[in-house]
Length: 146
Image (tube, rainbow, N blue to C red; front, top):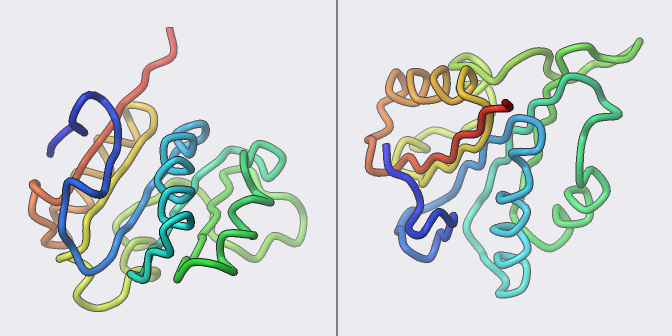
């Protein structure tokens, strides 16, 4: 796994046929920077965002993510740990099975960026390895609440 140069995610440093951005809670913040840059330049490659939150009301940038799907080849998957009644989307943490459900064939050649709390990041690194993603295609930023 690599951390982003200068502590900043920048997909311009890496080649790949697509991108997967994985966020836990406020870990969506650096991913939004990437998505805004992609939108500004008209990025044509496919992007999948997996955004895990405890509650639907905790989802940050929900409206902006929806708007970005109109200008990018973007699929946003929200996973909610404590979903509201009637929730039909993903539940719980992003894991290997969820990645398999939402990534297209050949996605192991994509670039992956993940930002979230340490337990999520450990699970992501294991899941991506199990999917055959080379560590040089995985870029991470961890945070730990004190």
